[in-house]
Image (cartoon, rainbow, N blue to C red; front, side, top):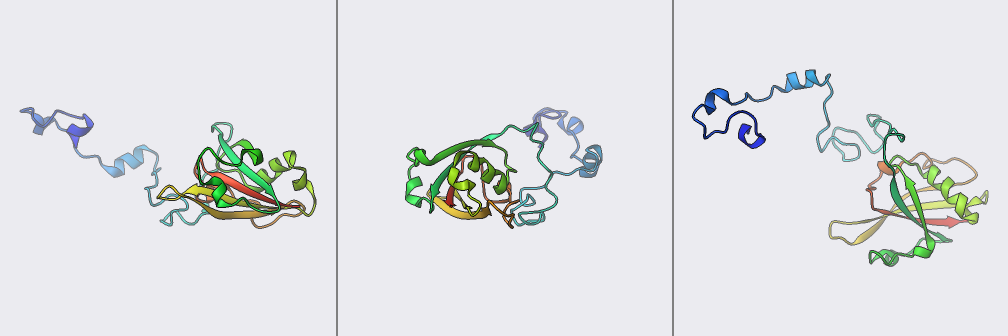
Length: 181
């Protein structure tokens, strides 16, 4: 291990046994870091490990002033969702119905609905309902759709505070939005 990380003397050197670094003492490392331990790959939020569920309280709030936003592509349609076949070929999405939003992973469905209301007059109706779906490639590369939630413009609902980061969303995924005026 010492040779692969470039610490100590290479094992081929005659004095390697005396000068090689001792293995790290995890307790001392954690104490040095102030007791803070990074979660392992199966302890991250939403992966079902020790980290809790999708809405775990352990997740730290994102500082938007220090985090770079990413481009979120939202495809909206009045009265229904787009069919999955509209997203079958990358680069051939229905761009006439596309909204491009720069946002952060912790954006909520209510925040997205408010942005959509700025550009889609149908979404401003007091009775309007906005249904969000996530479009992402599965392991084989074929796009799949999953429900994200629903926001009503006139009153708050259970999905209003649902964040994209609480779903399977990854940067580069798409959103399909059905607006029911």
